[in-house]
Image (cartoon, rainbow, N blue to C red; front, side, top):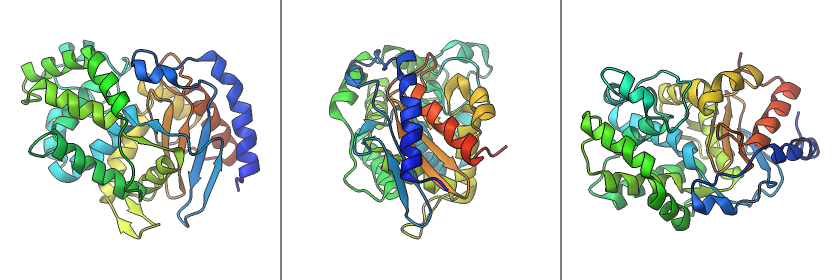
Length: 307
């Protein structure tokens, strides 16, 4: 099976593709990333971790946090309540689109992986105030990774909060139609902190492992989430996890995965291992261009597709 030498070769093969993408620039703090950075970790159920690239380099989760918040809220609120507010259907529209909200009756977000749906999910995190709600989510992240030192980047959260005009528009639309019923600014504060949770690709791979093992953490022998919730999350990762490139990703790579505009990709190969990747150079749909190439090489070489 894969080893570090082989993984390093794949990283070298994927790196040149960075020139075809660019780092996210609509969030000022993300502009500082080096487009040529690329790291990967694979986490196996026996605790073996195989890595390549600068695995200590940290990046913010951005949209990868959507799948974590979804698992957390499903566990706390239940499927019925969550899916009253958010649909289950993929969309061909960009992740920050408002168009489908106006077309759909009743106007609820199509799925929890687009921004409108993710905001509705984050709204359902319980707590007395933003600090308590964020602490509860972060504690869940600590359990998933086995690392209680993980926190968020204040700089990135502040940068996102100050520039999130489109997300505020989505919130006001959702509020108008009764999908959310809290003030927009506290929700934006919570959401931008959620997106700014920061970790390295080994931590990311560890979360992928928990999803791969149906919610069970084999390292700590801890049943973190019920299998049916892990299954729901993996299904969303397949149908909507890579924005509006999810169909092509399913055909070419075929692994449940979730990307973020910091260049992160969280992947879960069911029953086998978790994968964490950071490569900040993005394609036009917001996915890591080098990370996608890396996963394609891995999937083809080791027949990882679930299809």
